[in-house]
Image 1: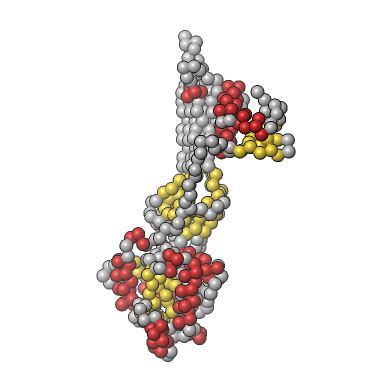
Image 2: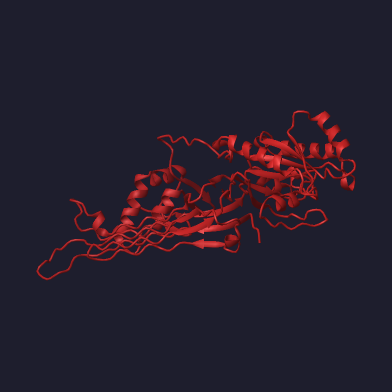
Length: 424
């Protein structure tokens, strides 16, 4: 089963909790703090495996969750880091943030890796907080939560040559004749619903990869028929090979078919319309083929055109040599044109606060990534940890900002799902 897109929720591992512990040994009455740090939570990593050709292995994984780091222990024993989760994907996989559609990664090379969801760092044990002024801290941190990312994976088939054209013009038959691929072939439209890949071997031992892409219909760039599926895969090819029914089988007009394909390509993407292209004039064994080809060449005299008959298995040698030569001449950087990543600049001013405060009825709601992370890593069962949390908030200017906005002592302040009383 060919699967070329799927959506997954990734939850990286939480960091292990730090430990609050004191050295207790005979004859050492004041051994001091010895609580170890927690281990790091597991990352979620995507890695390219060139043996894969589909995203089927990830199709039914709706949530992928990494393990938590091991908690720290006494005697300054740090917790172990959790194992990372590695998800294997085919070459040509693009990873999007499903919430905003920004590209997180475009994986095109075998063994290429990227961390998409980072595991949380381990919480520090009380030994890590010991200072000259506070030699025996009675608190430690909880582990930092791992990142949560909702991602959309999209596979774009990577081939040197893409066979494109209207339905039933002979693309699958051509691929089956010149490679070991065994695509489904039938005498009806849309026999090919998914891309088929084949390796073409020439007599001089040169090889290149050819893809038979699903047939186009008018309105493909707007998603009609198999349009977006077809055009997405065409983006990954070096060369576009237009297969045209030059024999006018089923009453087709070769010129009109070519023009429709070009319109869809030009409307879809500027990079796609600039790719190298050739025309494969198929069904030259039919009665009207020669006359149709003559008319076609008058309108498009500069296009490289190769006459073949897939039915009679004729005309392929010259075509394949030309394609192999063309594949070799294209520079490496033009093979897989990367899509533009969303780029932006974040300006951080000195007076910019890392949080926001708003009022909802009688509750002041405090929001911000830094504050929420600090809250999640605070062990509220330890008095010194609570006091440290309060000092941190005061250092960020939260108390001053609440007073400026009109908060009174005794008012409720909410962070995430927890409500506190605003007091000295």
